Image (cartoon, rainbow, N blue to C red; front, top):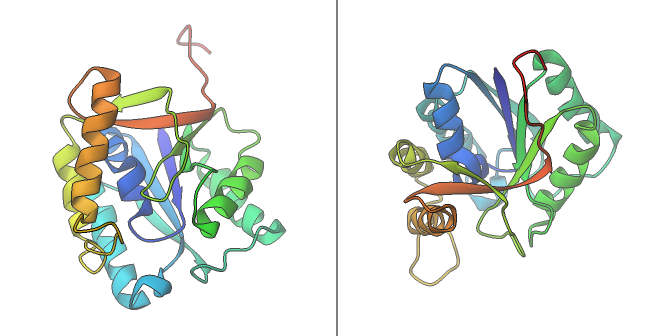
Length: 208
């Protein structure tokens, strides 16, 4: 099975669904990541690109794609939609993960809307949360007790960003650990990632 995760900036995917992707990779599934910008607004873009490549390797990503867009300037247009469609058409992923639409960051909102259009023929599309997500109420949970350490390791690979949360003394690792515990409590386990589905197709028999 092939899995595709989309994010606007380096470390977005790791925070939102890094534990789930690691779980898929460990189970032998093919994980792909597409990051639309190199995050120059948050630091040196070459450094952030290198950090993302390291983090993708930790997760077990088969291939990392770059969108080539400017940080904070992601445009909601046909070009963006087609760039997502091209990756989807090439790999035909069974599951796609992307930002939730209600978010204070404009890039996240734009990518969510473009992905909704680009995935109109994809069965399983799930929205993940990040530190700037608002009004997020997940109804789908994935247990990440076995992969929380890998998720945290992948986030630590983004060393230039760990302390850039603008939330008091909290760093991104603490935020991710708190989110995993909170979503785990909701799911009645220790650690989980929560998702809001655009569509979730449930197989009833092996032939479907």
